[in-house]
Length: 207
Ligand SMILES: NC(=O)c1ccc[n+]([C@@H]2O[C@H](COP(=O)([O-])OP(=O)(O)OC[C@H]3O[C@@H](n4cnc5c(N)ncnc54)[C@H](O)[C@@H]3O)[C@@H](O)[C@H]2O)c1
Image 1 (spheres, rainbow, N blue to C red):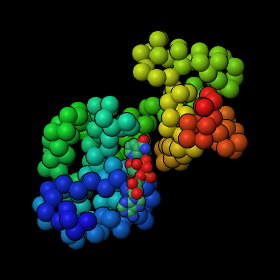
Image 2 (cartoon, helix red, strand yellow; image 1 turned 30 degrees about the vertical axis):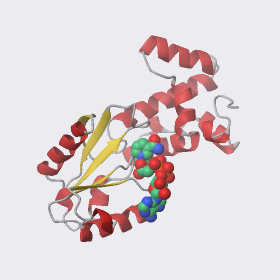
Image 3 (cartoon, rainbow, N blue to C red; image 1 turned 45 degrees about the vertical axis):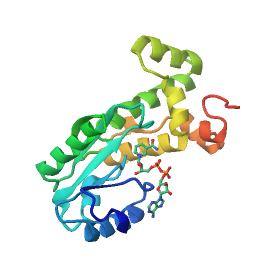
């Protein structure tokens, strides 16, 4: 980190664990100039809670990229309770500089995209479990009928079914609504070690 001490912007993208992020953010806060922006790429942790690890939380902001980053044009700029407008403006300008389109989002579970996307993936898993259609036909339906670039079940396999289930559990507990409860089918596949592409099987089999 010492090599980056003169940076104007620091974005941590370490594993989704509070303790790891706390360590990095405390070190960044001590090392960088007082006017540098400090950011997190977190998908699910509270930006306000992470901001507490920075001496001046006003300069802390979420800069949430989408996977795969080279293909995905969106960046969610997440404003924690303490984030100053100037930090939001700087994060938005940075996103545009690297060719992305920013949206500004309040610090809330799942931000905008995952809050809307994961319940749709979950509903696809429920439809599959109920035998409404095959996995292939559900995915073809959403590709051709809703113009999704890939189907929701193939997307769940790409994200990882364990991660998909964890995101839904976070939405359920933090928003306090059972409508986010993970499909039993997700639990069953995860239990069987079928985690999607990374394990060779999920809703689909992979060579
Ligand atoms: N995977 C996704 O689709 C995705 C999308 C958007 C945001 N994110 C967020 O990005 C962050 C990273 O997720 P990921 O999927 O890339 O995880 P990952 O485990 O694939 O990569 C984490 C990286 O952090 C490094 N690392 C581990 N411990 C470290 C430490 N103590 N200090 C510095 N670096 C350390 C690892 O070497 C690795 O390069 C998470 O906050 C996640 O929520 C992930």
